[in-house]
Amino acid sequence: MSHGYSPGWRKLTIVILRPLLFGLLRRDWRGRGNVPRTGGVIIAANHISESDPLALAHFVYEAGRYPVYLAKAALFSTPIVGAAMRGTGQIPVHRDRADAALALKDAEKALVDGECLMFYPEGSCTRDPELWPMTGQTGVARMALQTGAKVVPVATWGAHELLPYKKAEQRGLAGSLKKGFHPFPRKTMKVIAGPPIDLSKYEGLPLSKETLRAATDEIMDVISELLGELRGERPPAERYDHHRVLEERRRAAKEAEDAAARDAAAAGTAGDAAAAGTAGVPDPAGPADGASDTTEKTKAGDS
Image 1 (cartoon, rainbow, N blue to C red):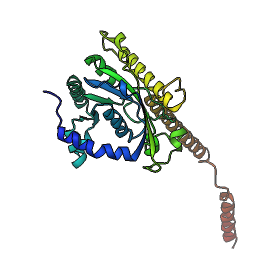
Image 2 (cartoon, rainbow, N blue to C red):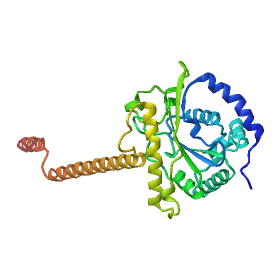
Image 3 (cartoon, helix red, strand yellow):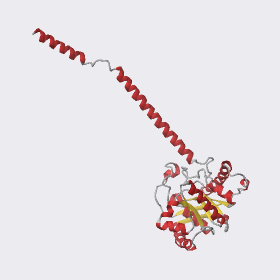
Image 4 (cartoon, rainbow, N blue to C red):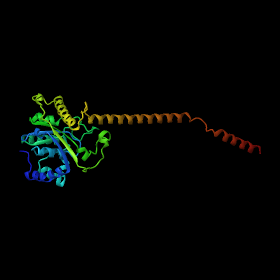
């Protein structure tokens, strides 16, 4: 069965969104000629904001292709947005591993049918404090090597000024951005597409962890270089590894928790020892009271 969509739904989204995006955003677009006009193709882009999918889709459409995203399944259950996503042939991705594998099968089918698939290899908006690309997940490399589809690297810049990512790091450039939607003054969306990445060195190799990681790193290297061109800066030598950072933070929190528990236990032990050491010592007021009692009894006997 071929990848399904409604031409009517696709036309409707173009009629509504295209003039809206032209009016809302300025454009600095480069390299549209690097996007093949026909055939299955993968667009691999960096991700800095929840608004950059629309900016990227606009760029790709003006390059002659209709964009198809792999999107969270929850979006497909909403009344209007869900109907539009189903009608335009977007692909739902569920959290369950079996459903995620099914989504990749649907993506492969779409590529075979000549669709233009949009991928964010990072898996989510970047958590890098300076908004550089993070380490990538291997889905794009796997898809490209399994299907033979071209991978066109794309970098975008500017969407973070329109709508900063709400879960971004609260430091560096990301921490300096004011949260919320900021349409005014009009923001410039910078988008650049590079030539398709040559992954021929990996063809015919087993799709091992090492092969997929090497291909993914190469894809992310190219995207980072393109983003550096847009920003007029050199990308960092080492990419931000969000999973490693989370693991380090969890480890530090666990160590702090364990240290606090040891301190509390030590304090409790010291308190118990002090209490035990004073258990047989008479109250300082005791002898005086006892003397007073003896005196009273003596006086009573004398009388």
